[in-house]
Length: 239
Ligand SMILES: [Zn+2]
Ligand SMILES: [Zn+2]
Ligand SMILES: [Zn+2]
Image (cartoon, rainbow, N blue to C red; front, top):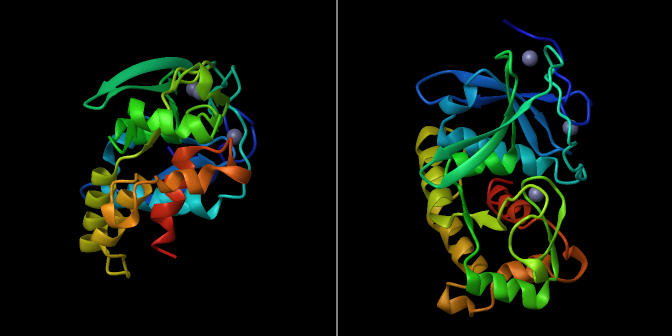
């Protein structure tokens, strides 16, 4: 069944329909709310998205980087039947992830962060990284729900429970490689992207040991979402 405009289950604004590459063939249409950082999937569409589709999602998020950020509302309503969406815990190899599903089977709302977690694109910061970030940036924005996280109190959101996380460099390199192989369009060198990530994580000896995210998120951008910064870094290679 095809629908007209889908309204965001959180902020009720019209969502943007995007088509992304699917695993086997063709494309899948999903609805995105950039200020809420969330995706609406009709039924189980999420499972079919190819790695190249994830790269396209990063590009779309990057293009809307100035959209501002709205924390998710506590009550989320199905855009088809208005029933209250149910908070659902699920599991993948990288651990648990969360989405909000319609009890009448119309689909599910997944925050960008939870979607990337499901697809094993994100990793939590380790304790040494948390200590370094905490030393210079007191507060970050939760990638899951948009609430502020006070790092003095821990590396997990007190509101939605999401850990402070960044994109996983290995997963990104693999996705860029698959995208480059599949796309006739010009694509960046996957190794250049991986190098940038190692530098960002302070793991590239030539670049020194100071994680670049401290540069990217300190000062004026303190309180920002680390994952958004990682997505900007990847998407920047495609500009
Ligand atoms: Zn919204
Ligand atoms: Zn519904
Ligand atoms: Zn949160």
